Length: 325
Image 1: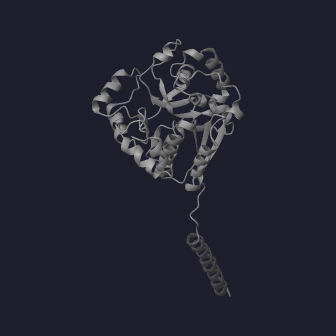
Image 2: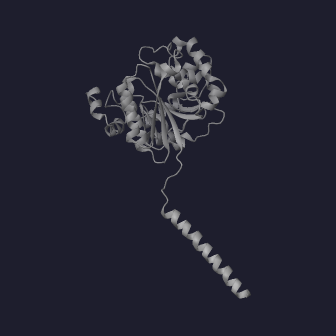
Image 3: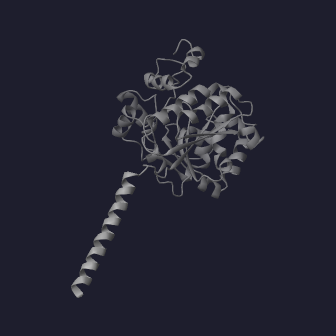
């Protein structure tokens, strides 16, 4: 009787194991491959004239993405932004399944908060939109800010997941510290505002929205570098730099350029020659300080052109930028 019981127990164990193994096989064979995707918020600003460069910038990000993350774009524009250009931007959602386009009308959302900013004759009000990000996007703790004049040649997960504890922003280290010094801030690690990682949660915690707003209104005619001046003055104590590969400018071309650039930097933790060289040769984000839609002779023009040709609007761009494309 005991032997029979042992056989029953052994048979039961075998059946349970077989059933468990069969379940594992079923789920492995029928796995959809779907995983929870991380959403990476990316904010940009533009007016009608910057529509095509912005489309090229977004196209470069989507074409270069290697992770399963969804890029969630928040594109801030003035109230008079054309319906046709809105439709062109929204079309990117249909072209790329892992792309979301959220258009933010600044006239509706911010009213007169930014209207008084001086454009110095060549910089439009969208230059200041980054300052209002924390107020505009209350449910987002952190985001990547990228100018429409940049292209991306790699995945943005690494940049997005950089440590942002107790700092407002990270940006590419800039050589020009004079704008901050004009306001009595001796900051040796000024950053370029064209590509940034912003800690919106920290900005809200310290009420930086109102500090930015009041500073812009009080110093409207003195903001030589616009939002960049504001950030480098008011965020000086809670600011850090991005690795050079996230935002290196296309004005760095040769070893001579790199050496000259390093000599102008005053920050103690400035980029090494090796890091800058690697960034120039293999950037994740390349910031076109010299605009490729204005001249085909700028450094890395061919890279920008390649992404322009991948858009659905290259024929239109050839007409708009005749003589360059």
